[in-house]
Length: 263
Image 1 (tube, rainbow, N blue to C red):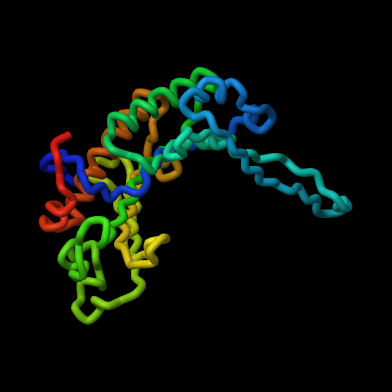
Image 2: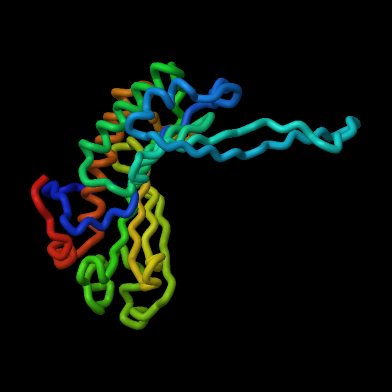
C-alpha cells in the first residue's frame, strides 16, 4: 500500500505527541564492557543531561553443574542523553540507537539531528551491522486542544480508520483499538498502524490515537540499509509515507481544524 500526500503542510494545531526514530544493530560488546564516554562528549552540548537504566541478565547453570547461590550477571545498560528542556532524547544501548522528541515541527530539523547522531555513532563504533530501522509518528487528537467540540469521531476520522467506531450504535464506546500490519507497495518496509480511543493523562478525557510505525526489518527479508546515506534515504521515504497516511486517516473538516500552513 502507498500513501500519497497531495501537498505537504505543517499543522499550526499540531497533533503530534511523539516522534521516534530507532536503528537496531548486531550487539556491540564494547557498549556492554565500556562506558560510552566519547559518545557523551560528542553530544553533550545539545544533550547535557544523562540518565542510566540497568537491566541485569542472570546466568543460570543447569544440568549436573550446581547453580550458585548468587549467580553472576551481565550488565546491560541503556543511556539516555537528554536536551536541557527535556524535549529531545537519545537512547543508546548495546544493540540500538534511538532519537525521540515531543517537540517535532518539521522533518528537516529532525533529520539534521539524525545526521549528526548517526555520524558520531558510526565514527566511534562503525562499521555497524544494521538489522532494523523504524520511524514512528504518534498523533493524538484531543477535542479540547483542537476545538472539536462534542461531535462524534466520525466527523473527524475516516471510517476505514475508525473500524467498529464508525457504526452509529457504537458511538459511545469507551474503549476500542485496532492494530494492522501493512506491507508497503514498494517492498521497502512495512507499517504497523495502531488506532483507537485513549485518555488524556492530564484531563482524563477521551482522545483518539493514530500511532504509525514505519520500519524495515532484515528478519522479514527487507533491507534496512547498510550505511548512513542508505538509511537516511529509507527514512525520507517513510516520512513521505507518514504524511500521506495521516491525511488518509482524517476528514477534510479535521484537516481544516488543524490549521494547515505551508512548510
